[in-house]
Length: 231
Image 1 (cartoon, rainbow, N blue to C red):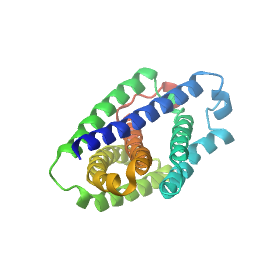
Image 2: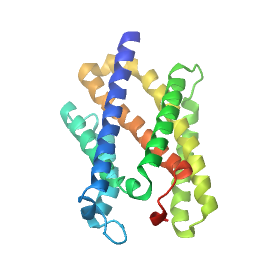
Image 3: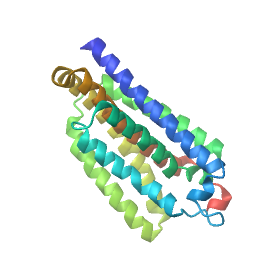
Image 4: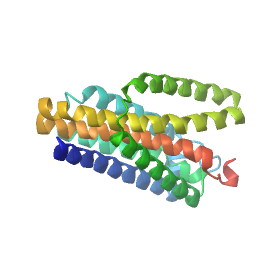
């Protein structure tokens, strides 16, 4: 399976990288052009109705792709992935309003290095990471609950702790998902054939994409320097 596995991972990473590029372009264009006024109020920079829709709609795309991967056609899965990445760009455009471009670029490069090293580690390690899956999912649920609670508490200490834990959690999920993709590839190639493998590569790219995006956002909260007018 060696050559096929390498080809499959290359396809996964290509989808992921292309999706990240589209997300970054959409986010930057919305933040730096008059399109910003459609998504954010001019004075307060609070999201408009369309801005809120852009922020919550990615969840719908993820659910459709997750539950429909076996029913949707290859072209439909790919189209949904592109649409999802574009909508994610719209939802993340506020980052360019809250942080200087230099800070965003610096944290992105740090995130890319951490992600690449962690994913490589998950690929080559002999340790069985499947046992960590349930622990990581429980940690993710706890992180979401803590984030919601802190929306009301506005605790700086809790905010810092959530950001730090989030970084380690998504580093763990990156290694876990990379190994899961590696282990599941032979079964995908044997039972689902080229068409099924093509669809699965998009789904696996989505998982790694989400790990990268969340890792980036937590690292930005942890390491980024905010604009003075966004405090």
